[in-house]
Length: 81
Image 1 (cartoon, rainbow, N blue to C red):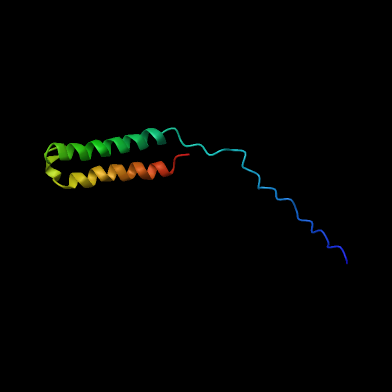
Image 2 (tube, rainbow, N blue to C red; image 1 turned 30 degrees about the vertical axis):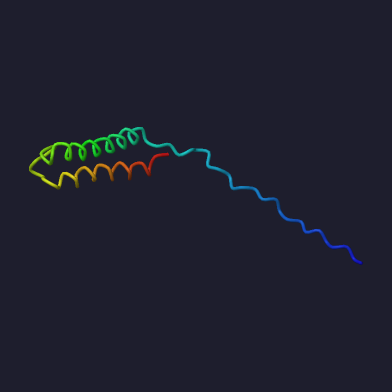
């Protein structure tokens, strides 16, 4: 019976990594945390003050402002490395 041939596969080598690692700008983390904290405080203050604070003229739109800050913080967190 004939012997089977041995297949020679090329050895896998992963692609080279870039020498420069991605680094976030220094303003990103403080801005992200600031937006998240301001948004949380804004919404909590709105509910605790029975819709009189932070800006009574906005009424229920205070929730939109608070959640806007929260969404901005989450969007900035996706850019963080």
